Length: 129
Image (tube, rainbow, N blue to C red; front, side):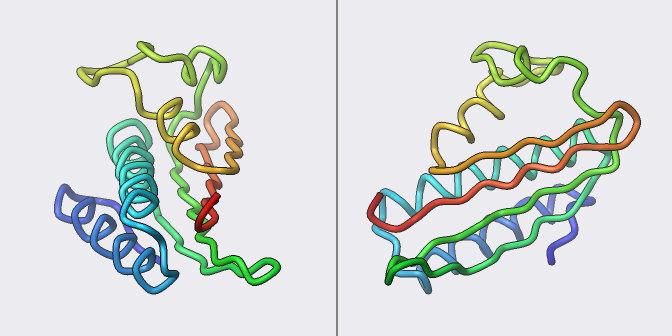
């Protein structure tokens, strides 16, 4: 588990996810997809959730390697999930591609949020898919 409490922690998460994609045998394109998604999700937890955690799980299914990222925060939750997943939506200074972009970069994407209870995103990418 990686804690996300500082800007430096964001870099640590990127390095840990990159290393995990290498161990899983991901192509350079898939490595970039997963690292980009992880970076966006961790940054959201840091900025909007006041910090959080990132868990990286190695998966295998039918001989296929995969990585599952679970990103949690204890922030205020997301009031309008549909809007938050729409490109261009932002509550800050970003470009508004965070959640929607992360969803497109991964094969599976779940978002669980509740007002005042925080947000959890579970995103999975399979090698070669």
